[in-house]
Image (cartoon, rainbow, N blue to C red; front, side, top):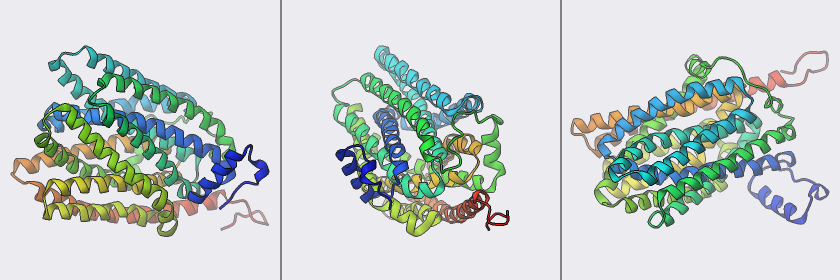
Length: 454
């Protein structure tokens, strides 16, 4: 653990704050500012999304639970379409330009939806809600993927193992704030006003992107830190190509595919239960927001207490395997006891396990790939592959229901898939260590006699 000399601290408050942070996370002096701006950045992005998420979920239920598979199909189609112009932005502009463009595009969309909901009739609002469901399901993956792409571009694998769990805690605080706002105001404030607030939060994120890009020099020991002012170039289809051509990235894709399929099973089970239990929109929205709040409170505690120590003691592979292990147990419990309480508990535990442990650990996997893959392939995996998993999960759930199979059968299938997911996690951890060692050897200074140290 490294604490800067008191003379380097500009004021007593900053010194005290840094001492508190160092009790939680092993942060070095040159990383403090970048860590703080990363926190504000992801706090703003997740606050915006969690203001929108309960509204999206309520609109999905209002549009009919039976129509959810079609909404997931529309989401996948939207992901594929949006990846084309996004790939062009990445290829043509540096991150200080293409990231603000992407966020302001989404902000403009949010304001359009706010206006549409304000003027729509009740029948029209159903269709606006369906489009909003698809759009929000695209939005949340893109804005978060962009954040982590920038973070893995700034920090190394070693830094990620120390800092990513703590950074993810900023995401959780944002999620808590957004969930709390919607949960407490949904019955008293029109959805359009909440949407305007979400758009303003994205503008805060744009400001943070600029600050982080300026701070890349403070992380100059990391050899990638000076690349941010140039366009990445390359092919616009590199993300799709490399996700299939590289065994490592293909297995990263499989990890996310397993997670998305099993999450969709649980989401549909939850949606079915909510549609039968709550009969007015405000109550449904408040219920979804309350579940989000519970998930995020549990996640925050785990991120502060568990994530960093787990990564340091278990390594990437074993830490990644925790979520599949949770899933095996959770789905087995639902299969044995297919009741409302077991589904809700499984949802809360899985989602918190993902946000607290699996997500920051998965981002470390991208610190050992090329810069082009960190932006292009990562975006493709985080968006298209994820929504492809949603699609597989949605139609698999519908097919099982068509054949008269209920919660028990769905949970049994998901539990078996989670066993394969666990094996995939362990393989990824081993490969990440190999690639990390190879990168360190390639970048190590030459030894005496002009040869590189091995």
